Length: 371
Image 1 (cartoon, rainbow, N blue to C red):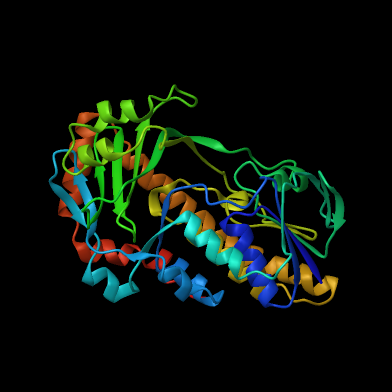
Image 2: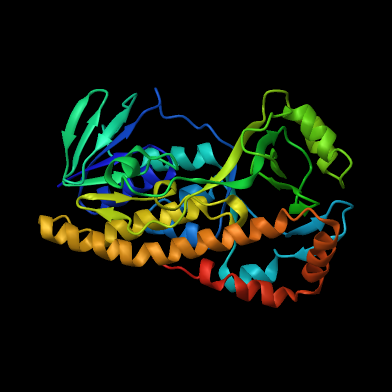
């Protein structure tokens, strides 16, 4: 049985690996000229690490990751509002990890069968019967996996009435600095602005920032970030001073409204193509990895009827969970981006008063997932 996977990102490669391990012949179509490691750092919470274990690559990814230590939320002056990392969190769920996206992709690619990857192939149309048209011709498959991101051609083709992505109301920057002596992971909340950072295994530091802005607003680049965040607590000014010009990735943040189904005929959606979310819970990669594991477990390499039954089960298992996480991430981002002084004061006071145990318990519905 043949599966065609559209998109060579985390969700696509993980789906190809999961299906290959389940006995499928897989082909990954990626429109970029080559499979590369574009991107920055990403967090892998415990549920994502369990999914990687189910794919047989968990240890390989951990060897390229840094297990996260103390973490939390601060205000711009440096006072802690909440501490969320450390022993208590690890004891309840296990350690989380920080990894460069390129390293995760490299591990997934290396685990795939030879010849499974095809780059420079742009898909133009998909039909629910399993036919795919692309720049090198067309192909018919027993299963088509749309892993082609928030602007998914697969979704637009097979779900023509699906809602379009909506702007979250704020924009984001990501960058990686040269090695610096930063040990803790932190996110700092201001008024309509946030800044976060986390160390990577090689000593470099992944940093990101958000700010309320209209969609498509002009980007001030690194100089703009230094003006905006240069007066915040250490080590934020040092991180921005160490960053190189041209190293900043800037994107407006979008999320996908709920779909009525993730499966149509022989076509199924995974990752951002199904449930693109804001990054406030650090679950984008984790949910794509979960998708891949569940898809392979529900789809048998058998008759067409078995595949359809499996896709129905995949939809039933994945849609409620991922849409719950999309909503939670949206709500956290909305609160984090509050800009009025009274709202910021109220928010910060509430965070300081929240017991750590209550926060840890609140993560159970996200992190307790097992393969």
